[in-house]
Image 1 (cartoon, helix red, strand yellow):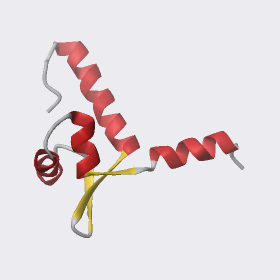
Image 2 (cartoon, helix red, strand yellow; image 1 turned 60 degrees about the vertical axis):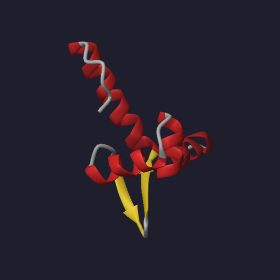
Image 3 (cartoon, one colour; image 1 turned 90 degrees about the vertical axis):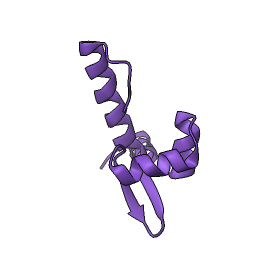
Image 4 (cartoon, rainbow, N blue to C red; image 1 turned 30 degrees about the vertical axis):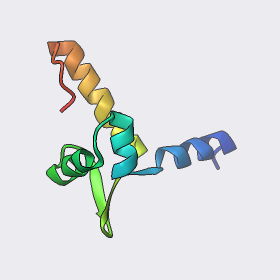
Length: 78
């Protein structure tokens, strides 16, 4: 059995962000975030009519991009 803190952290990481929330996070238009989801640039799933991105998947993607950038000095996230 896990600890309460571990359970709370797991729930937070499993939080789903909508395209609206992703857009606010990256500082872009909602339509841009929606296109990134549709194009597979973000680890998203479509639930009904909405694109959703799991926080933990988003963090993993960002971490990989940041580490890759450190290796080759690439300035772009996408």
